[in-house]
Amino acid sequence: MQTDIKSMYEDEIKEMLVSMGEQGYRASQVFHWLHQGVKSFDEMTNISKNLRQKLMQNCYISKATIEKKLISSYDDTEKYLFSFADGEKVESVLMKYHHGYTSCISTQVGCKMGCTFCATGKSGFSRNLTASEMLSQLQTEQEDNNIRISNIVLMGMGEPLDNYDNVIRFLRLVSDEHGMNIGMRHISLSTCGVVPGIYELAKLKLQLTLSVSLHAPNDEIRSRTMPINRKYDIGQLLEACRCYIKATGRRISFEYAMIDGVNDSDSCAHELGSRLKGMLAHVNLIPVNTVGGTGYKKSKKERMKSFIEILAKYSITATVRRTLGSDINASCGQLRRQSMEPQKEGSRK
Image (cartoon, rainbow, N blue to C red; front, top):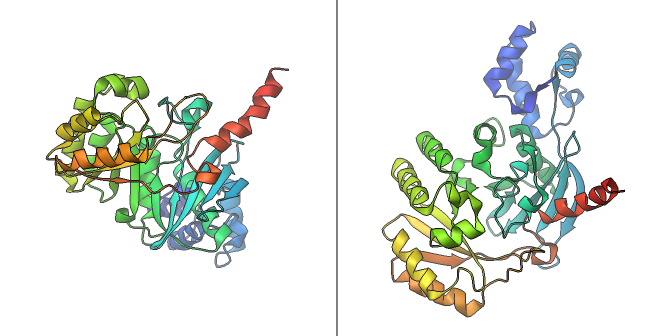
């Protein structure tokens, strides 16, 4: 079986090269090329042909191939459907801000979590992504647009903390000064509330931004919309969040999808405010995306305004997330579902 070389740390590549009878310093050259986004060993022009052949025989370079690309006519947001060597597909979104480019990437093919307002879970779960497959999403977007991505959000398809080891490896690689060199403070990781993963992340004291998808002020509503809450309830989740804040000194961003008539009442705002009061936290209100089959509608503007005003009484700052790519369904999961529909129809014949 060939080795996934782009998922390896530089010292691991060095160890492999030495075992091949090669000089260890070549590892830094190979590592550099991999993080420049080369797709074949033949592109590594400053290493010998003999070494390139050895690498070709023993390793492979993961890549993300563009299957489909949509560009918003409103704000130039770009949505990608990528495929990998085994034919599996994921989505990623490239957003342009005044401070640079932000990429929202996927960490799994599909998702196990089953949140009722999310398109990704409706197409099922296939497998975890490797660190190299996460890197490849970024590299392909950079090459396709001739840009440098400065910020990363792990909020695409999948639950990052359900793919903990690969995600941590990706974070180490993407922030490596000899790699893409994107600092942890420019990376956000979003979780639906995998409590053990939050505790493990706290131990590492990484200076990234942790975003927690809360979406409800109490267990009754949250268990109805987010099955993960039946395993780790809000009390357990917030206890883990307080531990994370204490360990890292970093503020947590609580994501809250505003769903008309479900979780957007004044009483919900008061309950949420009382739960979060005193925490180093920010609430990010998100007008819920329209996903077929859910029946959910986004809250009205006046509802969101009232919600923010009530949270302020508890000294909790809240903002409404800017909607980008609304004309191309920039939330992840939609394109993969569409790409799977013909296959499903064909399987029934």
